[in-house]
Image (cartoon, rainbow, N blue to C red):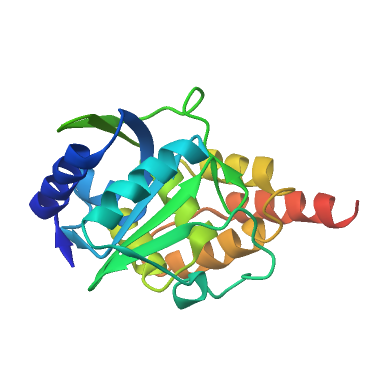
Length: 217
């Protein structure tokens, strides 16, 4: 497991091994630690905009002892349906999940997203990491659907009382063609969340109506 201070020290160390400055977006446990929703993670999830940046980042972490692992060791659900799989690297119990442009079809566009934080780590070169808002983190955890992802969603919900469900559902609808299971999985997670928070019936109706439209095409 990696604690918040250890994570930042690791990013600074990686910056010492980079061959050029790199920008990326963090999701998952990394973003949750930056936003104060959790204190440890074993999964560092990053999204790069071009393959070259991911390759340069991989070169740096390989010099630190991280080696590539099979995706099936981490992701199982929808594995045959997924596109643009991440490259996974681990060292002991620590793991990097490294995506390019999108997360299994869910596109992250740095020019359009409303990032809530940016962290700059300076070594030989600079590693700049942007953080997505909580609604995006919730939705992307629906998409990845790994072990512990639902628990992380619960952690966010228990801390934040002003979740914009309309935004989450609208984003899911906009990605439905590229990520066919997204509305079904979102509805499933929202039903479970009703045990700990109020989610109005109108939001479920919005999902059902949208899924019906897609299914009838």
